[in-house]
Image (cartoon, rainbow over all chains, first blue to last red; front, side, top):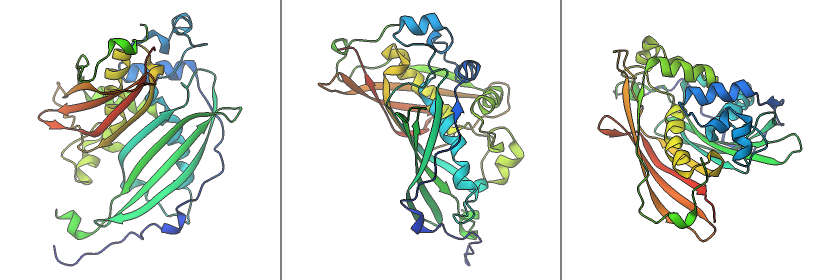
Length: 162
Length: 142
């Protein structure tokens, strides 16, 4: 305890409201959906079998609802790679997550993500970054909105001894 | 599975609970499937270096498991239109041959006129809740 030193530079609040150009396309693959569904232990056939998906009213296999995080997280590199923002990924913790699905993600979708910085604040020596990923299809129709609160933990001695 | 009808649902209904065992192997599989290779989810040394008691599960893995409670009950994963959680406590996954136990429960909080239903979710590992404000909105059959 005692002296508090922070080696990290706080995130610049002027980044609030900024958005980045849409990311390169993410193509949703059949085996990737199956792999993800297996990993979360969900045996629903609509993630694996085209006929089962069609019987449920879909044109083909769909992805589990939280598969959208795979697409969203792959777009976070625009934040990590922005030298002006100076985000230290190694000290970043995922604090909350939300999804609004405009439609299901399906096999063959070609998705692009626009990353928006909705908020930056500091609390208890930590930077709290609110990020919104707008995921759209090849026709630029909205597919999913993924909102994340990311906490960049401070490196104060006080926190280290807590 | 078929999509559940809104008329079958009443506020206060309990969803069938979900019990899942989470092992280190599950975390490695989720890391590969999701692309999240943060070592705190598979490397004890790194987890302890950053002040964690042991390797912890990906928050998104817990969120995915809790989502299954809702989509299995609703009868169609596409019915889940809104889903949000806070990662309040980590699910600690020891390398002891048995892993961590996750218990997910939920109840219908609200039935809306537009056919959507709001489900409040509780996820526990051991005696502690691990998700906060976990809420899912599903669009059921009218």
